[in-house]
Image (cartoon, rainbow over all chains, first blue to last red; front, top):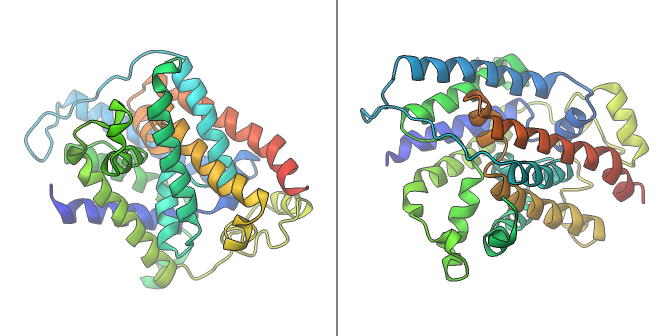
Length: 137
Length: 188
């Protein structure tokens, strides 16, 4: 693992999340109220460019820096896990105004109480691990 | 230069940078997905004793923890050296709605002090938002197999329909929370 490589990519991520105000609870609220194009522009342009990038990688059979062909793992096709899991995630996202990335970025802003949210998210992940056999997937 | 990048970055700068981050991770043989770290943290904490779900080769995910460390540092740098204005310029109609819900400083601060403060944690609203909200994010992300980065960006870029379904779910949950539950919590 190249430590500084991922540290730098992470720093860029933390900066773009902050500077475009994606970490702001207010921006997420505004997005769900369809009050501004800002968040839709960000997610939309990332996806459009992302689709082009993925298509180029697949057609040109691009190799990673380690010389291995870049592969994409198709996700298992089912409905309940994505829909129910997605709804639960969306409830939490709109409530805290932060998804997993922004939580950590906010910790860097000095919003110490966000560690409580991170603790909650780790507890939620742990609980999923305990009950997953009983859930429809 | 510093003055230029200290302005809030517009969507057409932020979106392409997110796509670039996804590309850089693919190019180095990894996948963009932040919520996987929450599972790794459980594994490091010994959660494998309770569930096999946490018995996986988490060392292969250690690069992702470094990515998160970078995200924290990126947040610190932005907050301390770059972000000049501490307000978020929201749509006026949204500010009005927020004020009606008791967010008096909407449009004047970066995040609501009403939610993100230690005092709030000792109220039922605070427990619900901070602990309950965090819990749902962690539970939901793992159940759905990814979060905004893994599904909305990586998954949709690869035209995966399970990811589209997950994103539809994110919005069903988010809209219900925003229009129905938030007013109940904060107008109370």
